[in-house]
Length: 425
Image 1: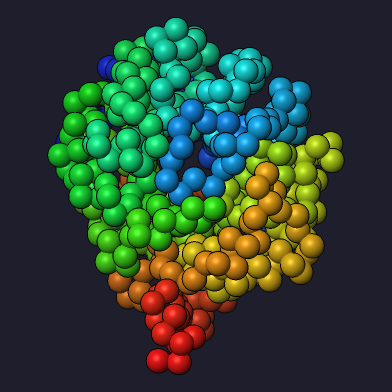
Image 2: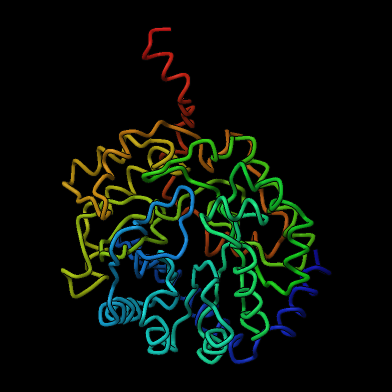
């Protein structure tokens, strides 16, 4: 464990711009820890304001990915610079310093770099396909010093084209990735694991390829079949979900690479960042949503002067967190779409999509597994630093106490079993 950790630290110091690294350590590290501590302090008073806010700045994208829930084929809708600044400025007043920036493809937002430049006291994680990060743009990112690109790679050449709905997708993405690395920017690679890429990308060989290229961290998501084109055939099985968790835990102690996960605590117990309240989402229309794949809202940033007031006073958001935490440690959308529908109807929540089909899509879903593994099969962190950090700053914060005390995980209803039941078989 010690040797890979020292190798990783040495690699970061050698390959990252000093000024950029300093901003990361201060704005994300020191101030990020402070924001989580403030979050925990507010929780004790019954006040929930997430330390990490994710903002989808617009809906447009140059690709057409399988299973995308964003209305990338609709006319462009974006949060303008004035409102982006208002969101961040208000959040900063309450201790926040880190923001996730999503799309669509956020690089298509005309004011994106001006936005970053106006908040040198913050750190931003830019979720991007990387294809618009030219050498010039990469140099601008280095000059800004407060942005880490998280570039999505969904498979080898053939799979990437199929998954992302484009041509020469992998090569164009790798050019953007290399532009970032050559400019000594802290850069990560994200992968949404599914049936067509898990064998290629959930491997030590692939991670070593990233290390050799100079990548600083990797983030494995799991494909979530939601939205207008669900593609259920791509979803991982419970056995594969466990395999992903085991792989991440093992590679953390073996390789000089940061490996992020957002769905487990240090003891290996599943959690949902939305249910814990540690993160929420703002859509391209300004809708304040529990998370990016729950496309219902009762509040909008365009109708409020304070994102803090909006989030801390929202009955819809509070009810969503509580219902999710009482019913599952996993993803409420995948495991209990019926509860998502009930909550939206109870609060009169608006469909926040441009296609206006969110309710029909939820009604069409059947219950399936998510990150919550069966009881007794938790896989604790092996790396002492990850385990220590999660115990302090990334755990369930006690929101699942009622569930853990008496509930057991429901078995997901498989589509074929439900069809047989409806047919009277």
